[in-house]
Length: 344
Image (tube, rainbow, N blue to C red; front, side):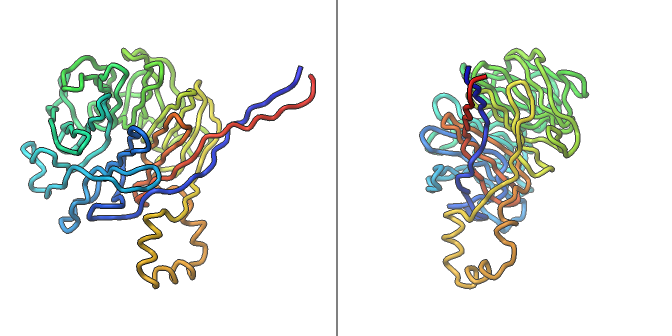
């Protein structure tokens, strides 16, 4: 019998993005990612409330290779951020999910509504009523579609998960405030695996919980802290086709990786390099180039994650991690290293 050990590793690929307050080829405080068909990706920019920065609140559409495609959604002034805000407006966007037709659903926790955009970015609908009754929402955050196009929504300030049709018809709900199994404290991120099971980043409880599609508790892992497998405000969770679980450990500035049972595997702390868009911006001004050449320790400082808030995966084994204050997405490749030994 030959001994064989498989080790899971991750190879850094590249960085996407740069700070861009006024739209176009860059991000401004990105808070969510969704992979689309082909190499498309959708990045939600939360932006800022500072009036001078327009249109900093938007969804940027680009490719994994950093080709800018389009943007949609727009910012409104704080005084206009009310229930009657114009269709397609964003104020505190939190997440994005794509239905089977490629339409984009964007949650806004200030406006307490879900805005719907077609493939071409045209606004085509909205739904959501503020409140705490069944079907009402209070600070919606993460969203994920199941295989039947039902939308699982994290109703953060109501400390629960709600399930809707994509047209906004209420279907079911589970959860309440607390720290027992199946309870939440300001949950944030969500994902659904290939079996339909649901994973929730339980933000203030510093843990990940897993449920059946109808909300039956299955397992949990994580606790407060900075050690392996511990969290400090986990915000994003993603599960790949092999069942590997990825958690954006926001205040610990890292991405942690777990097996399907919630066992700790490893962590990534960032390997960023200057992105293509970033290089284009730097090369415009020789003083930027000279400044980067003269800055001591820049390469090391530039690599690290800072505020990793969202994570997404695709079937090609790529992992995408969005960082809020650094206005970028780092991309990694999942790899397996096989070691074979002699007979046992």
